[in-house]
Image 1: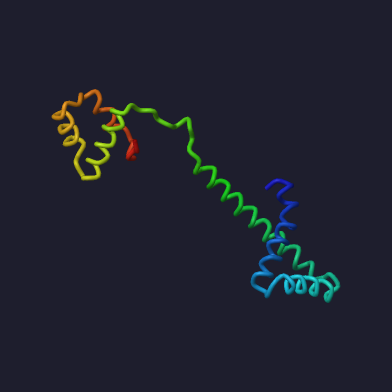
Image 2: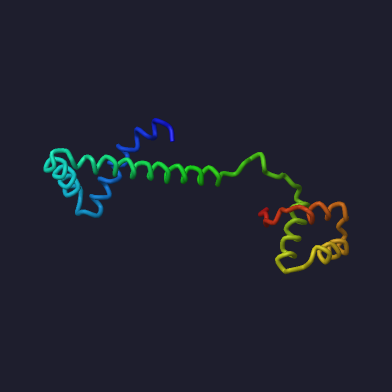
Length: 137
């Protein structure tokens, strides 16, 4: 974690803790009262509890936000991995996909396609590819 995240963990943790207290402790007024009363009544000694708590909560919050950012970035489609195929190849791929869904073997699929006039050099690349999605037209 870089220095900016380390230095921002305490304020972020304070904010998250404050809103957590407000949500579960009876509202914003109660959260302010609890934090201020604990600091004032203990002469600031309670900050020895609050500051490490804020740092831990802030660090956890940063890690959660970082994980969500990673998940979001991984879900984006990489344009360099897109495949462009012709309408005939799309139809052939969809037929193979449907036939496999009906539990036909590749040998059976190939024989059916050959009997319907498809050429072996058109069938083999699609059969051997790992494209297992049904494309829409």
